[in-house]
Image (tube, rainbow, N blue to C red; front, side):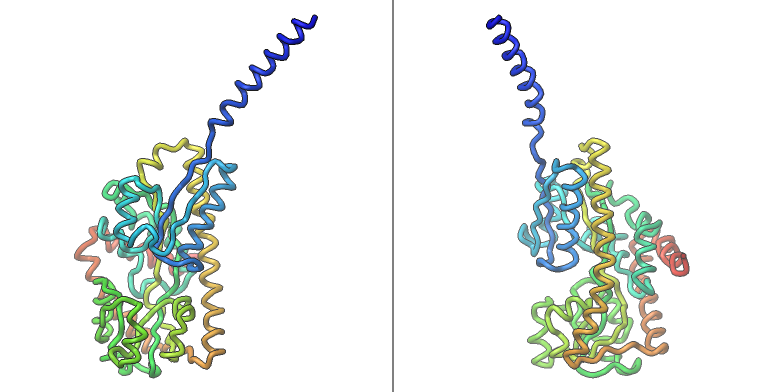
Length: 334
């Protein structure tokens, strides 16, 4: 009897060991994602949100490690690392236009009337048209699109009319899209790193610049340039990208988890940024800054300048007309 009991216990132990082996083998998969923005910015929050949702959806199978603030190098470097598969994912904006010119159209000047308008386009055909052929060229897949905010002017003097804009010396990012739009507005664009803006303002080298409200508040630009004009001329849009070979290596269920996590993260950021703009305006006003809405004449002038700047896209993006028409079709969509 004793021998039978011992044999039974050994058999049970063998079975339990066999069952436990797969569970022990199923280790957590670490996903590394790099970005350029510091903690607290929409891009970085979006990366963390993606990680939280992916872990939740996968039951802990995936753990996302976020590397913000250019920890893994500047944009070009970490985009290259993602393409090579050194890391699995990254977050960035129109820097990917170096690989596929249409990606610059994510930030087409004067294209969107509101966050709602832009979101419909980014969740619809416009986003698909912009990404057409991107994965094949780049080896990256775009998982979502989310806003960092509309860019608005900050200046020392109020901008009450079109004449107030013409001839202004304004800091612009050293990107053809931005410098060309400034030129069309009659602005003397001064390309320089954002870090140099405060000293350039103090020295009178520039009269102002443009940024999303979140940046204007975070850096307290309203203390140096208290006149904020809500032109909303460019909506800064970033995305989460994943190495295509890695994505295709995933089981279908896992792909669905990645897609859903990216969608949920984007949903959160769209809502957060719009609410953040309202709070930013309150902060600026409380600090005695002035927040102004352009007149219809001023707005129409900016729209015309924006449309003239679109020539850059017609010259470089084969389906530019289709993309612009698609975005316009979402203007009155319900």
